[in-house]
Amino acid sequence: MQRRKIILDCDPGQDDAVAMLLALASPELDVLGVSTVAGNVPLPLTKQNALVVRELAGPADVPILAGAERPLRRALVTAEEVHGASGLDGVDLPPPHRTVDPRPAAAFIVEQVMAHPPGTVTLVPVGPLTNVAEAMRQEPRLARRLRGIVLMGGAIGVGNTTPAAEFNIFVDPEAAAIVFASGADLTMLPLDATHQAITTDERIAAIRALGTRVGRVVASWLAFYRRHDMDRYGMPGGPLHDPCAVAYVLWPELFSGRFCHVAIETEGKLTLGRTVVDWWPNKAKPSGAEPNCMVIDRIDADAFFRRLTERLGRL
Ligand code: RIB
Ligand code: CA
Image 1 (tube, rainbow, N blue to C red):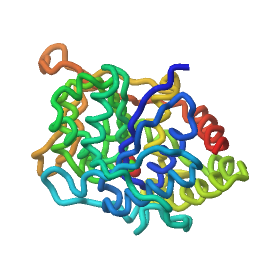
Image 2 (tube, rainbow, N blue to C red):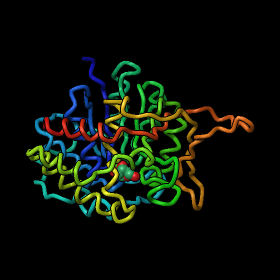
Image 3 (cartoon, helix red, strand yellow):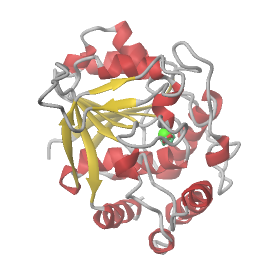
Image 4 (cartoon, rainbow, N blue to C red):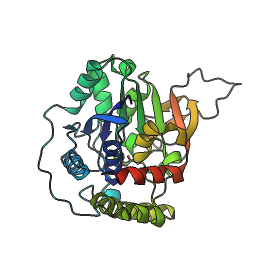
């Protein structure tokens, strides 16, 4: 089996942590590294949390890299109200035994992509896009050398951080604008898709019923992480955002969407960080902007959770 080479860029965050466990549990994937970025919580915590998750996953020798402490041009906005002060609230885990790899995340991304043949490495960013934009700044050939970028972020419809913007894009709109204009092969898992992947009581119970340490820890994370979204959206659970991006790499048949033009608002007073998705191109008044991104709006949530649970059971 030709293993798919990926670099997961994340801001753990409970959903990032589950995305990381899914990637490490999947033999189809060759996880070259897990890079971390400031987002849900500041970088010292996101990198520490990624080290904790790697040890929870077992004997994975995957390098954990530390990246940007703040967005390209703006002050950092975090989301402790969702993830807790540690970023991984819900269960207490022992501190990690090992530290991060000394290479800066952006330099690692450039090094790995340029060292592998063109079209073999996929970036899977599930936090603010600061590290990815910085890697593109350092190596202008990066975007076209990648096999692709499969990211969790953005929204076709309403945002979750402002009415207009989703968190990952809102935190660093300038970085997102660079990535969406880069010419890379882009796939976007927006809120419209991830809000179909709801951590209901039954789905959390199935994960806890694995009877393993990983099953217990993940079930506890999800029980904590969903409370904010249940209060806000009145849904029977919380959207499990980031594992959708890894699941798309593994099982694209569970998803569907549309190839659209997507641009990022970097100046709007009310719309900063909006992913402007041309979902219904106007043939009478064509915008002239060519489609640049596969935008996913449908997911087979039952199959997604069944397969996710089975993979978590392997750790
Ligand atoms: O808007 C959801 C995204 O923001 C997820 O990646 C979550 O982890 C937070 O980073
Ligand atoms: Ca995230």
